[in-house]
Amino acid sequence: MIDPEQRQEIARQIGRMNIASISGGRVKAIADGIELPVSNGYAVRVELTPMDYYTVTRVFRRGGQEWIKGQRTDVDCFEVAQAAYFAGMFRSYDENEWVNKR
Image 1: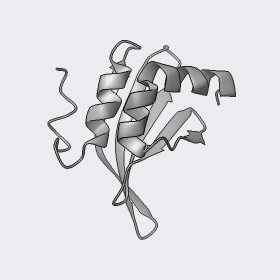
Image 2: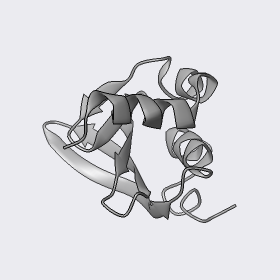
Image 3: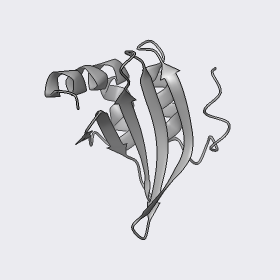
Image 4: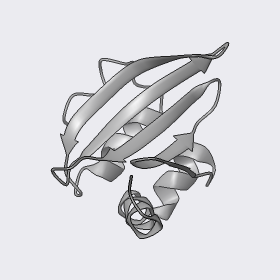
């Protein structure tokens, strides 16, 4: 469980413009980070790990169930904005394509 200041730092590292393009500015607090609701059942989760890295996950929800549609682990603070952006663009980057480092 992380505190609100850490969630604000995650959002700051992703960037206001990236958050606006991913979720229209919507940010939801979750236990270990933030979730950015995208559309059509998709969301992007950005969670802080105990090793001070991020895990960026594309999640799809439908009918009370949830599926992981791609995940990048060990993302550092310099890469988190790009990883979150690509995770949010589910029409442009499929679940295998966006998880590769660019």
